[in-house]
Image 1 (cartoon, rainbow, N blue to C red):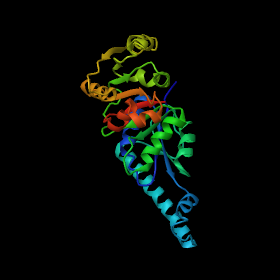
Image 2 (cartoon, rainbow, N blue to C red):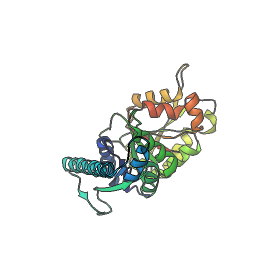
Image 3 (cartoon, rainbow, N blue to C red):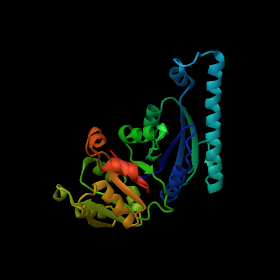
Length: 286
């Protein structure tokens, strides 16, 4: 499977620069194009949320419509400026299959259904780590993980110059991790270095890192197996992130929410900790 279509969803007032940078650095390695989708509530959605707050006369409706148009124009101008700085062709429609370029689409409606449908016709969805006070970031990550069915790349505080320099896989043999591996073989094949990290837990013997390394070798991917010992008082998520930093990983890859999301929310969990604290990009699949 080729990864040729990288989706970068964005919205009014959201800075897409880090996600665009990540998409470009991957796109040039994978010969993929960058599809930027601007998602904004339509006037009818805005009016429905405001109906109980202000009277909706024609002037209010006109102001809402004008605001949506202006936000879309500002978003498009920002992407065009980024393309000019980075030397990326900005196109209204598709170009060569082996070329990296950016396209722009404006979608009107609620984030969840828009991103679900757009994500399903792309190979990878690139989102930000959720930011308090910016609802779009959390809604985009949730939708990408639970509704799209494609791998999700969550971009943290830093975007390495080469995201595929050292990919570290957090392997536990789960269904979610298995889906991630199956959907990301092409990306892993392009990585300069791959490490399969297996945390030593009570279920350590059920899935061995060496077995995954042997499987990856059949796909031309040479991976190093490593065991992570968990110290007392340290969570698995904390230990994985610390090991990724120690090994200078440029990307962490893992299955998301192996346990139920409710359990992770109430008790804490590996996925929740990684999402909240990862500084490097994290490749996820549920």
